[in-house]
Amino acid sequence: MGFFDEYKKYKEINIKACIESINEDLVNRAIHKNRLFIDDFAALISIAALPYLEQMAQKAHDIKRHYFGNTIHLFTPMYLSNFCNNHCLYCGFKHDLQILRYQMSFDEVEKEAQEIAKTGLKHILILTGDAPSKASMAYLKSCCNILKRYFSSISIEIYALEANDYKSLIDSGVDGLTIYQETYNETVYKELHPKGPKSNYHFRLDAPQRGAIAGMRNVNIGALLGLDDWQVEIFFLALHAKWLEHQYPQTEISISLPRMRPYDGCYDIKNSVSDRDMLQMIVAIRIFLPRCGITISTRESESFRNNILKLGITKISAGSTTAVGGHTMGDNQNNQFEISDTRSVDEMVAYLEKVHIQPLFKDWERF
Image (cartoon, rainbow, N blue to C red; front, side, top):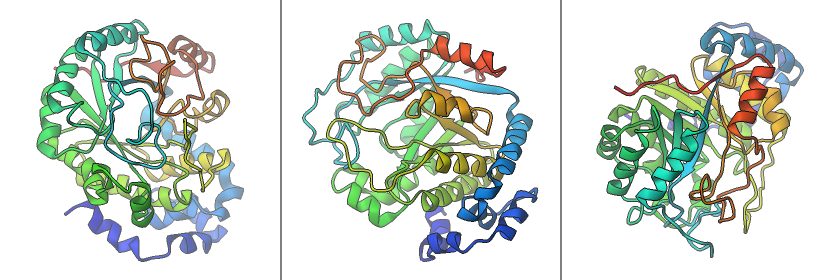
């Protein structure tokens, strides 16, 4: 059994209409419940919940402090390669874009690792495009054997794999998987992914489950906000996270909330997501999924990230670059998307300490 069996229960329902029909009584009831179900979550992301945002924010703050303490975990992304066989309409690395394609050598990977390690960070997220002939399993495993000398935790954000391949990477030092479904709307998904391996909606949908089966310590899922209606996307994202938590209690399940950012040849964003929308989904997720990690990346602005840090966020990136080798080769190559919050790790730490939040560089040790 996979998540699609759960998804099918709601697929034919007009989720948007259901959310729009929710009244304030249902919102008030959801806020005061100790254990919420998916219909309660729908209430929290409805328009009817807007008058309760301050109350929801306070509850989200209290839940976050209870389960995670007054801490924020720090990490940074490291782009290994931008070769890609996919034709995703919204991506700065898509196959038919005329950009500089590059993959780091092992010596360059080590130099990049050394530069990042100087910041004190112990957790890293490595990324590639979907081109197994370039960023092969052998290449990835060799990179991980280098990186584990510098970092206590290595997460991957690469193309979807079979469970045995995830297990092979775990044996090489990987302990975390980040993979976004991008959009849960199967029709929109097919339109946005017309060609390439990623066009297989179901294979990607089941990738988080395969990672959990393989033994990933952490599995992080997300939807790329702006591709479809945000309320419907967040409904299915929360449903997916809840299902994974129930099926794989030994795995830490986390959610990322990436909002579309510009890139060269940018895709026209048809479903805008406001700061208020982001705030509402963050506090709703925290109330519905109290043990779930929530990540906000440097796609978001400095001021926005500052304002939402205490409302349920558990993990943020810092000192980020979306260019291959960007930590050592400079950020003048083609980037996957534009960074908004450009603060260094030191600057991010200084801000966290200023507002009395403890920055965490490490919460996991590989044995």
